[in-house]
Image (cartoon, rainbow, N blue to C red; front, side, top):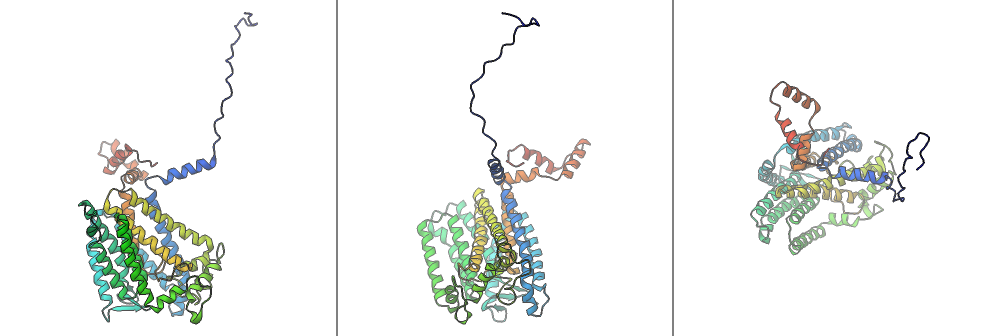
Length: 452
């Protein structure tokens, strides 16, 4: 073989490989979808959705209560911030209840079930006592607690049914009694019907509908057979039809479905002006505080129809944001109920999620003209301290349940403040015993929780 001028053998080149398939190009959309899915599947997703979503709804609700209630307060010769200050005080108290409920163990929640139920029943009986009960808008469901403050015990009845019903079903499931229909219905359905009867004595059918939804949610989570579930549903629908048929006011509200004109005697005035407010908002609204309908045109602008004022001032973007927050809250509640092994947590989380979701759907559906006006507030958003306090306590329940998940607990243990880790490291180097939580952090890091 001839050598080169440098007297070195020629370099043998490797044979060329046949061209193979090229590696797929990096798709930015797929990469973004993968990241979003991994973030969605993290153990702390439900925890952050419940905490962040509820706080955002509450803060936005305070802003809209202040904007929507100014004219009503001035018409009543009150300061413009009168309703806002009362709602802000209720939000502060509700925040304390949320914090307390989120730190309570499940055993304490179960221990509170019977006291809350008995207290709610006692207060709802007091509502019907002359001189104690107060009628508001034709419904006698209020108790005056001094000064301008009033209490609506039926709102606490929702929380009572959730806690007591979840504890009852959990104890029966532990004893394997839910396979018998009598143990599934008794005493859950009779006690729920007793609460419904006390509420309907005051004429508040909207709250009764929410209570019925909670009852059906608990039965569905307990695995009620279709025949049994359908039988209870048929009884509830029959009673509801009778109550609607025998009340001219309820029949008038039913006749306003899809109305575009106030009608004779302005019977559909509120429903029509709610649609007017939404229609005039456009994409981004007329601006915060620039509503026209709140100037005496739309009744209950800061309570039952605050969603309409939100659409007028913040537009479609504002209303869709509110809907997205409620959807995220509902999803997180379903996720907590579906991933737990504790039957009480499953029933309580499902009951709270049913309560908040059903009430939001009924309120927003009435504002949109898709459902009859039931007179229920938008949870965490509308004005009303009696509705805000038990709802925030229920949100605290969901936060506590989300924290009790083993993977979420491990992820929270890993996320300790940096200054705490530095101090623990300094103490460890000095020969002192490290803190307990730092030991928990090392134990949690050994388990794969999926959280980074």
